[in-house]
Image 1 (cartoon, one colour):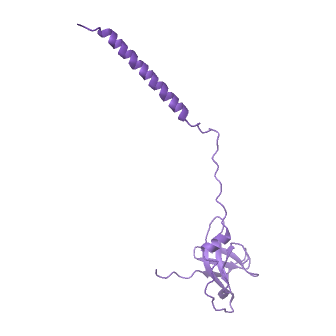
Image 2 (cartoon, one colour):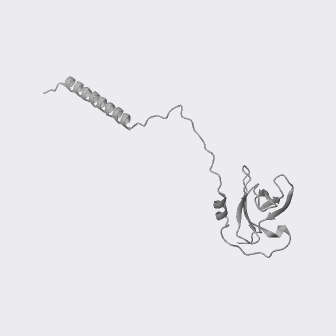
Image 3 (cartoon, helix red, strand yellow):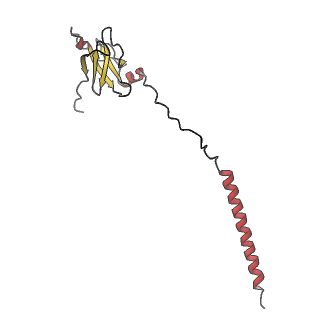
Length: 150
């Protein structure tokens, strides 16, 4: 006995097309529900400046809160000052951690008064220069101690 082959193929094709349509519809709705709103084309990217360095935090990082070894006082002004640390910053000048007369070190920003007669003129990676004023020539330079072998 022979089965009608034409009617089975049409049924198979119709079933396949209906299943493909159902799969396409399901895919569309899943993608539609899972989609995130596209970013606005008019949104501007804003870069903010980094926060300003807090001198007290810089002092703590450089060990300014700790008392150091008290150096013998000598009459010359340069011997009264001891450079403990430096943060050199090209954009804003930087900071220096300076101990005066063996007292605990304090942070000074470039241009700030260190005492009544001197201001911090400039800083370099391992030194700080002091002068009578910001525009005056450098009176003397404080150097960080040489690093010993580890």
